[in-house]
Length: 110
Image (cartoon, rainbow, N blue to C red; front, side, top):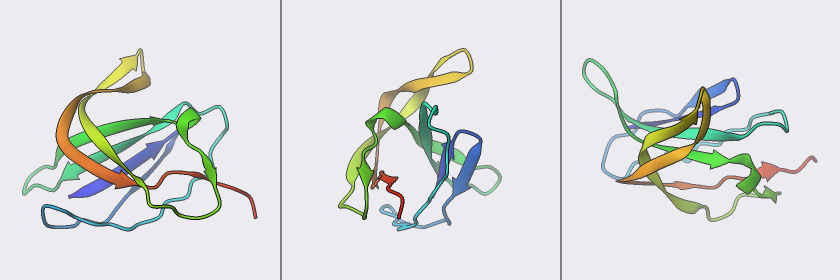
């Protein structure tokens, strides 16, 4: 499995991990505009011919707190559907059985 993170026009992907409880421990840092609405986390399962999505999560930027250091993170339930208003993502719905542990924060300037 691997994770794809999408924020504004940026996209980043973790390395593939095997097993029922994969751990990536991978940091991502993006410099983004303040007018952004949120970002998408996608969990994918690598396939022989094509990959399949296991779940998706929309995190509104308004809910992300500022921090100076990593914390313990929080468990988030992944969903199977994306809610859109036109082309703009509004959220996700229909929980799956998959969860992901994320530590999400705005890094304060040095």
